[in-house]
Image 1 (cartoon, rainbow, N blue to C red):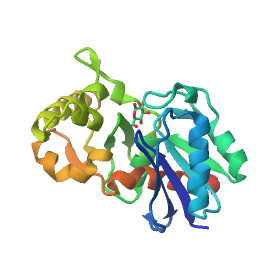
Image 2: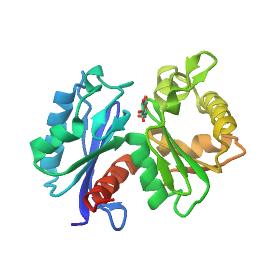
Image 3: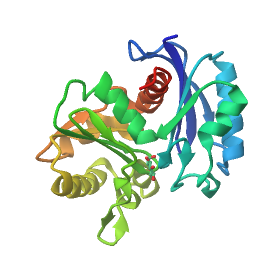
Length: 249
Ligand code: BGC
């Protein structure tokens, strides 16, 4: 079984696809549903079951959530319903689908995909994956090893959370043009660089589609690379994590 269902929960949509976890590519059409509002565990569970059925998936399931996730349990909920905090997501979905479920943070999932097959492939040293969407997600790797559940989108900058200043959502809400937004991202990259001294930043998330418009405006002593899987990195990485868990590592 090397085709595994990957699901990625975003602020506006839930995306899912079957992923060939040997080749690192989707092997089904991309299925998606609007993220229900309010985004309670119960309503999202129904959406996951619907997406699973629509893709005719079998075997392990990987799910990327915009939360800190420990042992299948969501611990935070910055941009989804607060009912997620303390919710045993893996246990609940597993009992509905009767198949093994692996749940992890969305930026961690995106980072795993990029490190395995994408922009970070073969890169040693410190690599930080940043996803710009409804929030800012972070995944920190050293020599390819992930330190899970880092939450540096909530880093304080000038008295406010970084993701309230420089996420993709803020760019839309505040109607920032690319140079205005890039200035904020540069301030964030500079702060992150001063704290972690990464060799490489990989930038992904909802803004990925427009990488060419803002990348030339970004500056950092670290190398800046575009996420190769763009907005699909989360679901591909979730499938990879599920396949690794089913193999016992
Ligand atoms: C959440 C993170 C998540 C990021 C991107 C943040 O608000 O706290 O867990 O990775 O958004 O979705």
